[in-house]
Length: 364
Image (cartoon, rainbow, N blue to C red; front, side):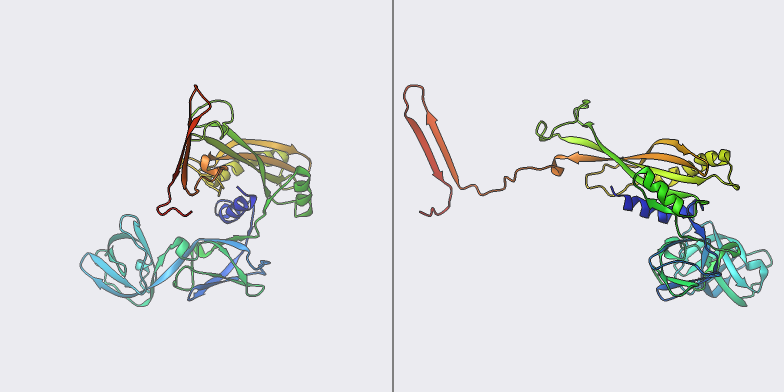
């Protein structure tokens, strides 16, 4: 397990659950052409190439090109394949109709195919298809929502690749998209190094460090003894458990805006976010991992209380299994050419020697 794996994961995931460790960036517009999306910000973004941003609260427009109405229902046809699934999606969101009654949420009645869907028709309603009618969809990772590595276009714009061609521009849910970047999440070392890194930055904000701790080995899965099993002792049943331990340190500022008591109480808020994002998570290991080998929480504590900041620590463990395949074994895959045997007796020094050449056609 490597610090870089944990840091990379947290940079991409934590902004969806909290703004403690990142900056909110005000989005003006998100558009796309082909497989490339462009984000334009209201202010200079300060991002660099390969910076990670996390986008939430966007919907993807899918133009409605046709309709068919009956006495009870309205069937719409979309320009692109929609992403609706009956029973999974309970409602649909429509937008752009001149008839205000059609704009908003509607119960989804039926999904005949990938281009059509059916909603219930209000009593006595006569459909007017004028305007710019659209189906608004939350496509998750196939849309504009998610974490993206961006390339800088200029001081106000960045771009990132899309999985597939989708509608443009993005519809901003509630009139405002949430975009977070400039994550303050780093790999750490010793306490003094983390402290030095923290004081050099804007120490009025939360900063998170990931530090790897010791790796320990448990007893054998088979023997259930308290001693670490030697591979020489159990060639066939060797299966020591490897326990990777790492800590997350969060520096919480204590200043005119955050009292000492409030800084201490942030522990539970941070723990709640880490529990959601870290537990049951796996990280790459050089050893075998069982289905139950997930990240678990070992401890949450307050490590340091000084005037300018409070440090909360959270210790996690993740298990893997060290099998016989992981350790050194003498290679026995050699050619079997001859059988040599010698039979002795207790009466004399004479013995019977057996030499058998296994070649199909012996070569002398």
